[in-house]
Amino acid sequence: MTQNGPPDDTPDRTYDRRTLLTGAGSIAVGGLIGSSGVASATPGRDPGPKKDEILVGVSPSATDVASEARAAVPGNADIVHANESIHYAVVEFPSEAPDHAREDFIDAITSSPAIEYAEPNVTVQSLLEPNDPYYDYQHAPQQINCETAWETTRGSDDVVISVVDQGIQYDHPALEASVDDRIGEDFVDGDGDPYPSQGADHGTHVGGIAAGGTDDGTGHAGISDCSLLSVRALDENGVGSLADIADAIQWSADAGADIVNLSLGVDGSYDTLTAACEYAADRGVLLVGAAGNDGSDRVFSPAAEDTVVAVSALEDGDSIASFSNTGPAIELAAPGSRIVSSVTGDDYARMSGTSMAAPVVSGVAGLALSAHPDLSRTELREHLRATAVDIGLDGDEQGHGRVDAAAAVEIDPFSDDGASGDESGGECGDETVTASASGSLDGSGWWGESDRYSYALNTADPCSITISVDGPADGDVDLYVTADGSKPDRWTYDESLTGTGAVESMTLSLEGDETFRFYVYATSGSGEYTLRLEERGR
Image 1 (cartoon, rainbow, N blue to C red):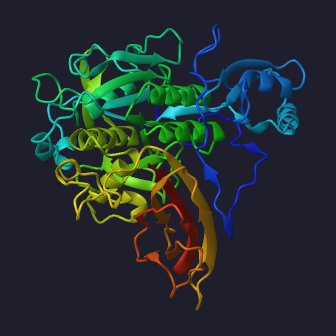
Image 2: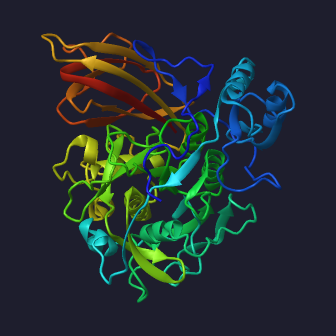
Image 3: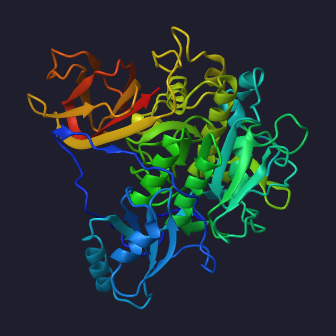
């Protein structure tokens, strides 16, 4: 189940009628997708990967996604599934049709003003590197200082971690006490029972890392004792369709999950996945994703999404794992090599991969939220960043650092020297609006290149804004900010992010009348950068 690039021969293409704003101008705002229904599998539809389907994004203003998509579809193509919450429909295409027919179809359907995009229903795959059989010791909890954290909390069952994966063996002796009473949902067979096939170990292993019973005399120790939801969206081979993953994320958010673990990925960016992650984030869910396992310098989706915490994998000595993907999107690092956890058949095993690193972060997030239940999603994310330990790796490898359970639990995020960086005193609500812009700058000359952006507030009652800039791997960029609409430069500004770190961020309180302008300046080297904003309302 090793991920070695795109999972199948489906082209990594998205046809989009919307303008993507880059360079000087206003930052495009995403995530304003409303809820109008619960996703469910269409009866009689085959489970698993679906190569002969196209996902069609329908305007959020549409009152009936399926009807709107059917009206735009040329010919007699079938609408086989629709999700009213994240506004997409699935069109089945004849398997014998040539590639040019698919392209003609997409060109035709995206000419409709009601259609936002069209993209293939690609295969998403688990991000696991299988390794040795079970041994009777662990290193991950010790490596991230869980013992100290457990003196305060082992995790509250009021905190819910949803594991979107192959399904969790929910009657496993090490897990049954942690599984939520609702158990979960099945998007593979659509029978409502997310129990995995024997030998389909990935989901059970991932779930056991995040929330296996601790100090209960059974099996291994998970990072937390928070509640688990088993959401089955990958089949026994560890693969699933993009549509099923999106539906599973949306279901998790509607089920009230606090944290969603995504130990799966696909190479490329897809609007349906973006919409699902934004839907969950807008409902206060912290999403945690695995970076990928082909050792490249690109982070797979959904971890690469702005709304998802991207996690790289470490060896037990805090070096970056050879298989781990890296890049500017990396936010945190965690142990991911030879991790002991539960598997199907009431057994235990060692596995390696960024799939194992992600639930370590999810478990620590659960501990932090158990200790500090008033944290919003944005505050929790910033708290994990601020309490991470700098282990001396490049920013593209460790992001803000290795996650630390003791610091995340013991440090008060709302104290004067607390970690969250939010000056609002924890009074912000869960309404969030995210925005981003990317560009490429050269700072190797006598005067560096620069870009400018502006941003107007979007929440009904603005509370705070988190601003971050991910710099290039081979260079540095500085960010200068004004909040009164005036033009910033290197000498005139209200706030700034300067230095040599690959990832820099700050959180500011808002009065509601701010108009932000940004000046990104390359100080050395060259390469791509990403400016990200997360605005929160009361």
